[in-house]
Amino acid sequence: MSVRALVRRTAVAVVSIAAIVGASSVSHAVVIDGWVHDHSSDGIPPRPSGYTELVQTFGDPCSDRANNSRSYWPSQSARNVAGYVYYHPYIARDVGYNIRNHVAHDKRDKAVDYLVGGYNCRYIAGTTSWSTHAFGAAIDTNSARNPMGQDFWNGKGADGHDYDRYLPNVWRGDYPGHNFFWGIHWSRPDPMHFQYVTDY
Amino acid sequence: MKKLLTFLVASSFCALAIVARVGVAPPSAIAAGSCRGARTAAVVDRSVLASGTRVAAVDGDAFSVLRGGQADRVSAPDHGTGVLRHVSVTAGVGTTYVRDRRGDDVVVAQTPRGVRRFRAAGEALNPSLSSAGDLVWAQGGGLRVVAAGSDVVRMIDGPLRHGIAFSPRFRDDGTIVAGIVSPSSETASEDESLSNLWGYDSASDGWRRLTDFSSGADRWSVVRTPFIAPDGSVDFVRVHGRASQDRAPAYELWRLQGSSPTELRSLPGEMYLAGFDGSARLWNLREGSTGAWAIDREDADGSFRKVGCGAVAVDPLDRPDPDRRSSTRSAGEQAAAGAGGFDQILVGDFSSAGAADQTAARINSVTGSPATVVDSTQASAVVRPGVWAVVVPITTDDPEGDLSRFRQALPDLADWSWIVSI
View 1: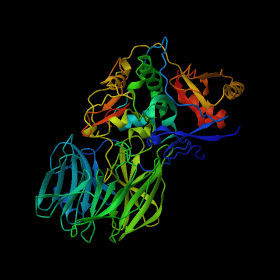
View 2: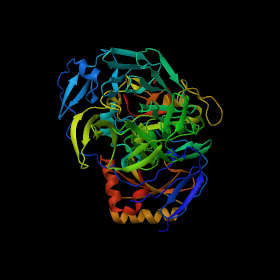
View 3: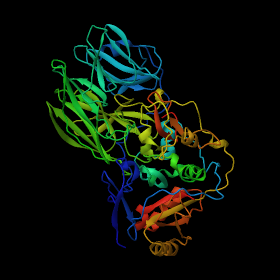
View 4: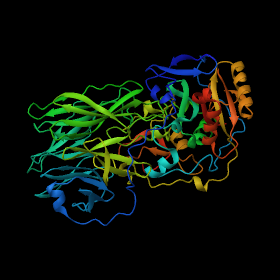
């Protein structure tokens, strides 16, 4: 099958089935009336550990499955420019329903700052190991303020306000959290990085 | 219906923001028998590592040393702690490898003179020995070199500020060839967009780029597992693809003769050089999800046959990287029943409610499933403002299977359908 959408450095291609989509991508905080977390095993499924469980759960790296889900995030591609983030359906409910709505429900969309990313078919630099992003099993958030190698979390959001560890606390943690593993405590800290697998 | 492209403003991070959907699974690697299973006990036989006469690979907590069509398990001579990684044998000189530990790694060299250990301040990658017994490994953006007979570690800065060095190898002329990851112009992240082979000449203390691969915001190109071929050239694997594509990247075998790189051929799938057995190339092939690596020998007729198991220059996958080890496990199994969130197939985006209505009607007529048009006021987490989408409920406990069946039934919507939770 041919590639349907190609991307240039400064552009995101959005293809409509029927017609052009060219509307504003300004983020809007929306109160989710009546929304509650889904903390069932569907909402927060078991988190795999190690390479074997990672592949058994998410499939091969760079596979068609790895980007079959999406949700819409504020400041995804630039400050106050919202956009879609793609990832594996295994974490669809946790990311797209629990976490995204959690942030919106708390009226903390401005805590999110660019860049926010999910699926990415790439290697870990200098290794033969695939990034967890290649499995659709990881999300980077507030990347510009939290580059790899930085051993602390910069909680400043898109509005410049310091939200402290609000976002990491939403992403990480065991029940009743959302159970993503945070890369900040690795030997080479990766504060932007939250992955749904451990020991890899 | 007419398809058009609209380009919206985005940032340099767009590689993570977009997706090119091609729906092709990665090609299978060359078949090989299972390398996962009961292992025989390792024996202490330091002579075979010290002499460097046989190819060695990391196999769990010991080495697998190839001997004809068989393999012996040999204990690591340093009796250290940490995960064994990146073993390299130089004929008649010895064997070197990394003890990968949380934080500072240890580089171990076993030669007829004995076992030497060098503590690296950080992550050590891919040590190797020259024919004269000099030792080199990659660390950070540069190299570390220990002259034969010396215990003094010399630092060599890399050619690129904020670059990452890997896989250094001595060439016959005494120069060193190494992979160098170019620093990203974007936010520093773990992912690699571009690497090239560079040469270091100790006489001039200078670096020279030997390959000229390039990358873009979405397009990436990396070099991996360079090995010195019997004729003195450098064989290596180049891998290139697009970050947004959901299919396996392209693998190619290249040769660097002098300073001229040439593509020898495409490779059938994910495979990395593991050295040479005489004039025959050895390859490491990943064995599915097992985390095991097979070693295949490429015969003169181009055929491959399995000759052993273990990781040579590749990262072992059956042991967690100590730098990324976690002590916490999932709490998902203990989670209580939730109260919301239903998986649905979302098709979109549409620029008008009318276009979405038409597609919803077609979905309903083809699949019999109810199809509902939504916008950002109803599904703000998955639909952006100003557009419309169609959602179809998933009624089974197999959302991915439902999506697959939906795409088969409506192939023209395959590239624009996702699983979402609303």
